Length: 268
Image (cartoon, rainbow, N blue to C red; front, side):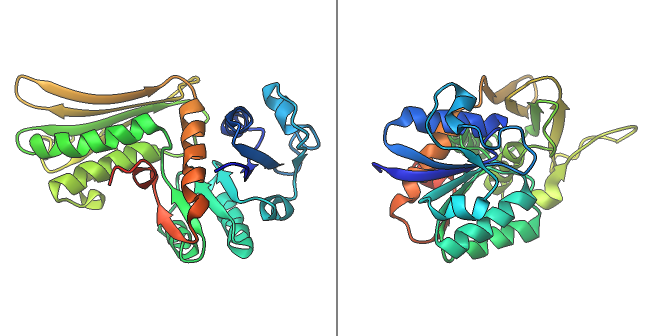
C-alpha cells in the first residue's frame, strides 16, 4: 500500500540491512524507524548509509518510540527480542512480520495470543521460492507416501544459532501432515553409533553449519532404485527481505489474525 510506514529491528544485522535496502528501493513503502540494541556501532548513523543510500532515518535504541510510529514492524532478530517487540506492537496496535526462528511452544503461544489483537505474519521463511517448495512437498509426499524414506538436509552459515532451521522444521511439518503423522513423534534429529535399521515411519533431519552459506534445503525421497529430491538454495538474503515486505503489504488492511506466507501468496 502506498506510503506504508515500516519499522525495522536489528537494523545493522545481515537481514536488517537487506530489509532496509528493499524498503528504500520499493517506492511504495517508507522506512520510518531503524532500531538496534544499545552498544551497537550503528547507533545514531543514517540507516540508509548502512546500504549506501542515505535516507534521513537515524538508527535508534528506542524500540517503543520507533515501533509506535509505524504501520508495521519487520523483525528477524531472536526469540526473546521478538517477543519484547511483539508486546510493543500489541500496545500500539502495530502489525508485525516475524521472520525470527527458534521459538519454543510458549513463545509460539504468545504470538498466537497477540494475533487476537493485531495482524501477524509469522513464517520460518519469507522467500516466495521456499513457499512454493512447501506446496510442492505436500503434493510429492502424497504421491511418494509408500516405499520412500524421507530425509531433510539443511545447511546455513556458521553464525546461525538454532538447528534444525525453522525452514527445515516447516518442511518436516508439511511432510508429516501429508503423511498423517505428528512430526514430534516422527522426527529423528541426529544419528550416531549403532543406530539399527532405519524406521520407515521416521522423518530424518541433518544439519550443516559453516562459512557464509545463506540457506540450502533439500528434501530427499529415497526409494528402491531411485531418489527424488526437492531443493531450494538461497544465493542471498534478498528473497527473504522482499518476501517480508510483501507480507507487510498483505497486513495493511488487516486488524488482527495470525497468517503465514502461504496466506500471503494465496497458496491455501
